[in-house]
Image (cartoon, rainbow, N blue to C red; front, side):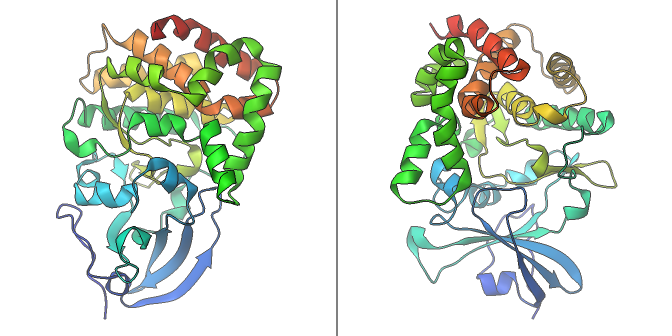
Amino acid sequence: MTAERPDQNRPQLAPSMAELLGGAAEREPFGDGAGKSGAELARVTIDGEPFVVKYLDLAEDWTMRCAGVLRGVPLELWLRAVLARLPACFNQPIVGVAVDSTAGGHDGRTALLMRDVGAWLVPVTDAPVPLAQHLSFLDHMAALHAEFWEDGGDIDVVPPMHRYLELSPWTAAAEAAIGSAALVPRLVAQGWPLLAEVAPVAAQVVLPLAWDPGPLVAALAATPQTFVHGNWKLDNLGTDPEGRTVLLDWESSGRGAAASDLAWYLAINCRRLPQSKEESILTYRAALERHGIATAGWWDTQLALCLLGALVQFGWEKALGGYDAELAWWEARALEAAPLLA
């Protein structure tokens, strides 16, 4: 029997995982690829069409534990119809969701049935992305933020505090305490102590916030809020034949400052950007204005805080590379923003 795949405009759960995957053939598990979350993925074929199934399991996925949404953020976004509201410039591949009811409670797994968009994803290389694609990503990022600008409670899924703690020393310590084998928390544990050695001036501002992002989160809360994806890394991005942006991994999404998505994008993709950070910031701001959001009065403050926030998230990673021009740029931004926390 072939499973009915729910219409995204009528959010619902499939009755069971078996029905979600009904008629699936040629099941082929594969690794995380560029991802490091611990989530299990498998390729399946249903009625001759290729799909990918992603299983969200709290016991296996450290990013779920950080988000604090025990059955998975995509499940909440699906049920609240947030994914159905994405602008038309996005190709969001989730077409069905089911929860493993056999385990019950919070111990069950959530399965996401997704169209196989692998052919359209940004190649995992060291080469800069094409300028046109980069500009499209920034424009579509702005369109997403404009769509949900100052939106209601449906977007309150992952709070900003959780996003700023995801790559913190707390996460590294917590994952070590439970014997987690996840790679990223181990690298986080290595990197944060290095920041004080390679960039002591930056560390004076950033390390206290890495342990307690409260002052940063409070300052950002005084600026406009929207729905943010939370993980605009190139591994999650692509462009389909219609020019829409493919965007994967909605595991960190929720209410936040628009510029936090931009800052994350600039920080995690720094080696592959075809524009300077300054040019990219101007490009995004112009796109936000073009999509109907006036930026006068709040932009400079939010941007400065979010650039500081990116080093709160990635100071460990920048320190692993030593003190170079990249870390020096972020250090300067952190020092500029520090007075805004007072």
